[in-house]
Length: 586
Image 1 (spheres, rainbow, N blue to C red):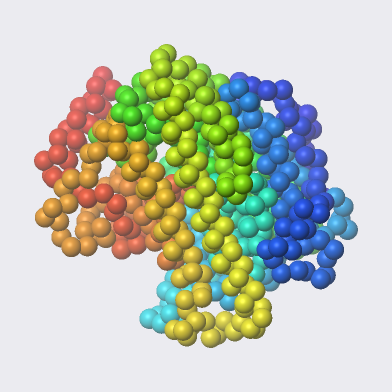
Image 2: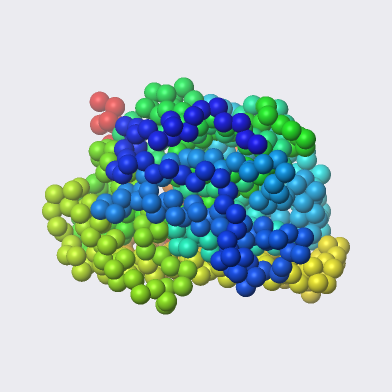
């Protein structure tokens, strides 16, 4: 059972950096038992588990349905502001079966059976959260490039090992759990991504204080882990920082700085196997494994990310894209000379200097009010769209002190965001269904990992199965961005696409990179959008679209997305930047 160090009453108190627009909504108090509807879902999509009266995935489906209901109840119907707070869902009793089973033995089998990719997280409590690659290529063969369990164990001595997107890659257990979470959420998230974290015992800081772009549901499956969760810092104290990526990369967020940022400790808890924890996006948290361990020492937990902000489903993105679509100048400014910079910097700058209640509204997701797993069968679609459009219009009116767009313009934009969000949902479901089907096929055939290096079987490895789905997700994001740019937008829309003429063939992987470049990074065959933050010893540090950081990425693993501008334009831009910096110093 989890050891809670602070009374839950503290979680229900308003805080200046996170004003509550509704009376505090009590969270669920325990992991709910699977209902008949949850069992029916599991029977429809997954192979039955004869060893248990209810499938663990039926229980997972019910858990995320309860979390979704809580998020909806914590959403102000007038403004759309989400005021959800962190909470713990303890295992009902030591005799209760854990929600999900995943142990060190499970991890060893997963590494052996597939071609996985892992990173090692930094552990300095005073520095930003960064990751380094685990493992190395040992030879020229396909087998020599595969991650080994021995490499995972060696990395554990240096820090936490992270398997990103583990739900898409580990088909036998984690893929069905992701499908259950996605469907159970019922549209509260445009996508669900599961990352796995493995930490040795007695690691005082396994993750330094940081924030995330996702609401997360943490499921402890082995060992124990201490979590400390804080209220969001006042954005006005660090306006140039992304509130969803504090404490990552070069943005340090040590504990003593949290106290100076009007952030308060809300929750201090040690999770045991079977315990769950909900942490909303932008709530700082830090973890460790120095105490509370019973039985197996190595800690393993699964983090289900309820992705909304990653896929542009929040009021800030809706407002920014809508203004771009209709060519309306943004009174909050933002970006540099290109349309991409205008959109990519939307979470920093003047937006963070707005009153706390406005910031909270802008950074709230509207997925729970808009998206549907099965949109065709929803008779309330028009009403949902009209509600979100009216909320966005009122929010913009408060910021700009004018009605730049008519209600029907906002509705047109919301319809496009709904279409985009449901496309993201569809791709995630297809990805997890494909993984579930592969897991069931392997169980029937008796999968031999030694045969997986044969050419005719390699296509079934997640290394090759998963990337096409991420390409579809990238295409959906690019399509929404192109739609917004069709209006000749504020912030320099339409620039930045010139200068490709005369470049060498393959410039995307060979042209020198600069800090701030928009890129895609190859992580084990899957491409992820990122921004270059630093050049270090021939490699590059990058920050991904969800705020995570990868250090020391080789140039050949990075694809530059935008053709470089002619040198004369780049020189003018540098001079302008230096002049601006000089004025700021004076």
